[in-house]
Length: 288
Image (cartoon, rainbow, N blue to C red; front, side, top):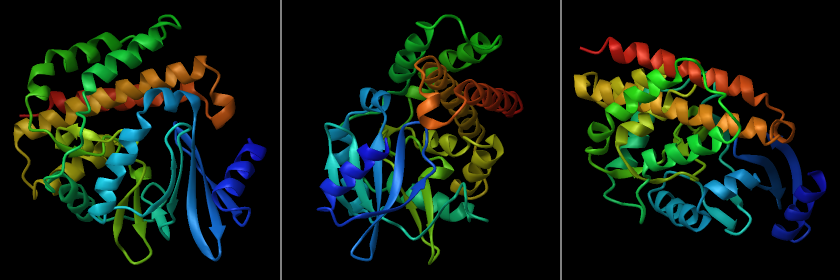
């Protein structure tokens, strides 16, 4: 991997780039801070599975929409075949590593995207994706948690309700690690692999990846302190949905041996997301 990274850096930066440090990657890529003539950039190198899951040309086109809105940094290199990209580095910290963050500013960031009037050329189609991920997980046997069918039934019983919502431009993976708080207090989005048109509350739900309560607090700020019962229902249903989806992806990654590449115990990741789904399910049952 080290030789591969160095080869990519030399190609992109004409043998003048210096790798400063690796960033903690997500489930889909490895990333590194690179310096080139005193300017910093982030190099993203995707996994093979990520490249199977993501339309890179669509990602490139969607990222341009966000660049034009001023909500992310400029892209300087994008290899749509290999899933390698380089963006200008935003001096600051992703929210999962920041000491604190302003939930109202996160809400404003997402609203700017959602209310921009811009649309992707593709809809996200969450249920179609969910079934594809689930089917792949099933090829490794029955590794689902005991209550998985109960939670799955809940979201599929509400499929028509969820799919009836207005579609807007969405990030679809707006978790804290994909939102950066710059050193001057501005907020930016990064990582656009899953962008597409979707229900705005799906983005709010993905913010609850770490804690369901954090996503709920964002929902409250997004709707100026007064989300309706239907908006709360959508939040918790989408949160169950996203958690089960990443539960399935983690199972696949475990059995494909990707834990060694990422340094993750993907079975524990799968357990974490299932527990997150259960928390959201409890919240859903309390909505009035």
